[in-house]
Image 1 (cartoon, helix red, strand yellow):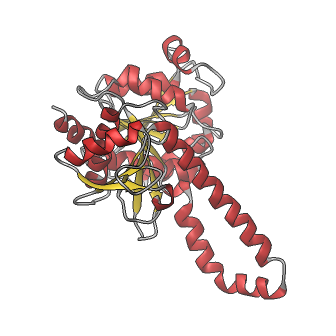
Image 2 (image 1 turned 180 degrees about the horizontal axis):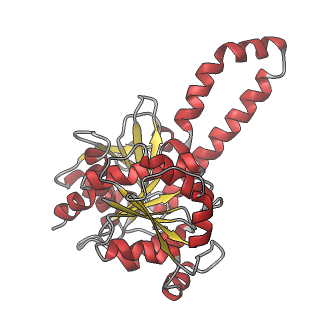
Length: 331
């Protein structure tokens, strides 16, 4: 298995990417090889003094980098020797099994769609984000930002793709599918959600569990939450913001009195465990489902640990044959 990594993508690239690759080599299977695409001199500087298996880690020199300030489609089309485009091409040409980048989200989506291309029968690829839930597992939100405007048929396909991932990677035997809506009743919602609800009710091969309100994202009552990319991204960003605000307010309250500080000290291990569980770095990234190969979009601010976990996620995606499972569903 070969994972093609855009070593120049991310706020702290290539240092964080190289750190993540070295950590991942210690935890991935012996058959996993990592290819780092990017500026050879910078990558070698990050590797200097490090001990690693040279047979499992190679550098693929590239002369260009796609930045977050560039127009995604134009950059992908014009910068043929960029680290992102070259890594995506490796998957498209069968030289690698998975493409990973922490670079521009728009450019990663464009590279996935234009270079690796959609699975036959898939109308729109979708970003899928794993959210920790109250039952100790994860709920997959799909689409979490790839497609702002959607048709009901797209959302039905998102349900199948999310179910395939949860089955093959997360080990959920019969994933419960929820439709993000502004109420639990079947008649609630706008034209898109009403139409999608009717289709999901009749769709074979999935376990539709009904509408899900935004507050149920982390309840654990659903394994996959289907949404258009606009609503999904708003929900994701709102959840992130709420978590950050609650953490800050709790810290202020605990530090405000002696009793609070004592209570905080006693509860510190529980707070640390919760913080770790809610940390995006523990998941690593979001897969782009519906394209002809593995694609993982890592968070732009990922550090070495986050990139390591993104690589491990890519390994699971490939081993779980998620792409093949989705292709089979739409054959």
